Image (cartoon, rainbow, N blue to C red; front, side, top):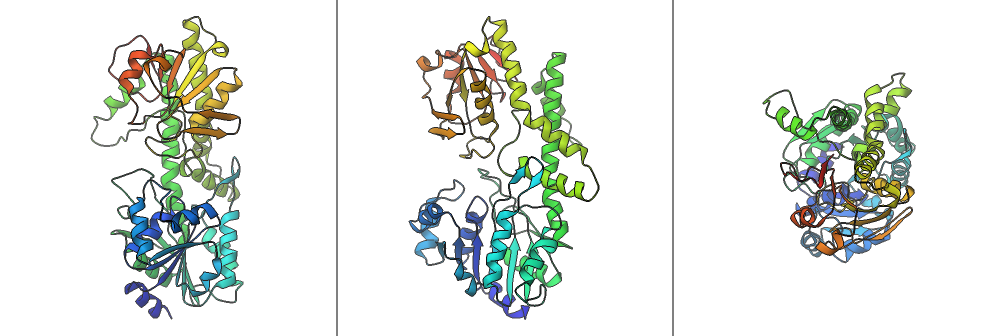
Amino acid sequence: MSNSLKKSISSNKAKIAVIGLGYVGLPLAVNFAKKGFKVFGLDKDADRVSQINKKISYISDIPTKEIVRVVNGGKFQASMDFEILKTIDVIIICVPTPLKRKYTPDITYILSAVRTIRKYLRKNTLIVLESTTYPGTTEELIMPELEKSGLKAGKDFYLSFSPERIDPGNKKYDVTRIPKVVGGYNKTSGELTKALYEKIIKHIHVVSTAKAAEMTKLLENSFRIINIGWINEVAMMCHKMDINIWEVIEAAKTKPFGFMPFYPGLGVGGHCIPDDPLYLYWKAKHSGFSSKFIKLSADINSNMPVYAIERLKSILRVRKRKLSESKILVLGVTYKKDVKDLRKSPPLKLIELLLDKGCKVDYSDPIIPYLKFGKIDLTSVKLSEGSLRKYDCVLITTDHTRVNYKMVLKSARLIYDIKNIYTGIESKKVIAF
């Protein structure tokens, strides 16, 4: 049965459906379409579907010209009609996996997608989950749900997990240049998934089970949250000891082995790092194991905006200013440099906390023209020598390349440099994080 599916993948004739057209799904869909596959993008977001069919990209990693190319070529179309799944050979699930509460996974989107697939599932279909989730999800949750159709996994349909590794804004490593990990429910599922991804990705690493692939993703992201939590703790420690953390990191980087630099800041943002390790924490706890490192790191990182404000209070106090009476400019609100993404961005939490303290808060960000988020309703301030002088302190919270930092240094009255922009510059108006 798998031979015909393998041939259709090999000849680029397999019909592919990608469910979820966000930062993970859209790049996958476009790259398969560029290789000649007929690709259908399915999403419940009408605006996304409309944008694709108008040949407009809403993700910076995918230029609009690439959308134009594959849509005009008849290789890619977006739809909200999931009935198309009746004709599909390969289904890739790329839906969000948020948290219900701080330490509890929300797999509602995965379950919804899987139940929709089950309604239209036919024999000889390959289903691949890319959404990050806890170890065991593919075999313990998805497989039984799909088998309610009467079809059997590994025999009538094929099932794998292959974790996404998208890094938004990374020009060096787009989806086609990042090695892909694949874990099949059985050997045939893994082989088919490997054959599929080899069409767009050079290096494929196959592991023995879907559970091992699920664990791989969580190991990668837990490694990051733990090391970011550690360097944030060291930064606080160094401040107490009157040691420059940035100088220490630069010195440690000179060691050619056994050290990898991480940098302090307001915490972690985006979808992956704030949430994914907590999936592992939750699963481990349900298996009778408490992961102290993950919880401790998550708590440290989530508390960094509070720590930053306490530091700011002290900085202003030395200058005979009260925080509640100060005008503050937050410079940069995205969670990552030069990436138009506000998901769980720590600067947003910082702004909310400053507003709670009674501050007059504005922000400036070259790629975010306005903010309407919770209690925040602000428009980006245009930076100028005159506008900068109005503020008691400028907080540099995202290191966008499109900001004129020379002008900021010249015109601002006081700068709290959380991103180490002014390293090596001697100025009494610059306070390092």
